[in-house]
Image 1: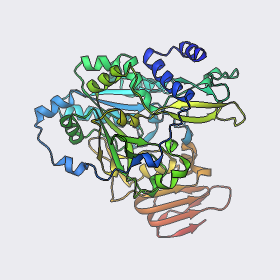
Image 2: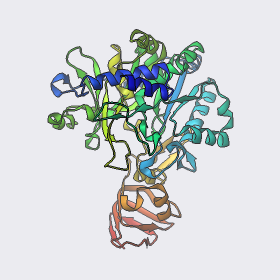
Image 3: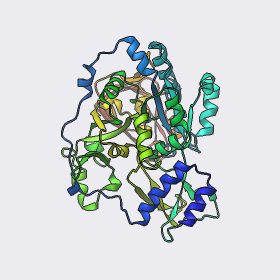
Image 4: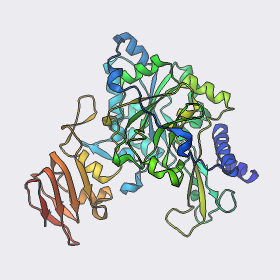
Length: 464
């Protein structure tokens, strides 16, 4: 423990961050696997639905203005988007009509504030990897935002633990590799340890809508805000119905011992229970990571727990150098933001439409998003121009990274407004005036890029 304490001091972590890490480290030392067997939980059958909440209503303009003026929109902005070949904050990627995620978020909040004559607080939770890029981008495109009080919440960092010695790992070649992000559950010690939680409460803020910056569906809903405020809950999770595409992701459940709502991530599921974990007809709901917090109740809970929100441990085994499989094996101790649902007896969940969960995780997602299947609304939201999302599958060998995708689509994305499915195999160059309808595939079996002639392709498998 002395070595761990020394490492935390070396890293300059604040008291709340130190306590959170030591809480997780004690679990690791104690042999806590973090596993939740199927026999200890039961499925959640029914929950309130967004459509029902929309009919509640009741707020006039003045009441809504007051409620919004007590609300913070907090975006998790710590990711670099390395899986898409990016080397800067993912939120700086242009996604629609030349606007980045960050542009859209800032414009949405400005429109919301002006339209409701309210001052909605904007907070970005940056990591040590994204902070500088984000501030530079805001200075260039939205300089007025930089003067806002409590704009930036900095994520903490955690030491990687040597799996053999159970001490903080040492990597002489690159000392930065001795540290890792602590997972988005770090939002709670970051809020407390930075003093921002107290400052926001003192400034009259009570509620927070928290979501990922790369989820374009995660826009402020005044219906959900009103419902949350009236409910008196400390915590509310937006969940969506699981499909086969979501079966490997976490799900909502209820603990049998105390009937408490909990979140079970895939890393928490024992191997023998994987089949039931992936049964979407049994465990129906997944966490969208759109969450609602009551700051006053959050602070009270953390004070009761000596400054720690007791989240379940997620133990990730990796190598100290993620690009070198032969380097020292380490544990990265992480927590999930949504797991806080189990910390509050009055926590709740609501089923929202799938449209509120529209993350951009791959170039296939980005390809569809930049097409005419989507449009930008007057309130700076990205909406479908059709009933369902076009399913796009691009060849990872050629389209995994954004720069490669853009080189193969130099004149823009083909029309997908009438396309249900598009699969692209091999290097294909799309020309202006190309339209896909129905289910189509395009295959180039050669290694060199080939152009697809402009035209309308409908329910065709094309080889070039």
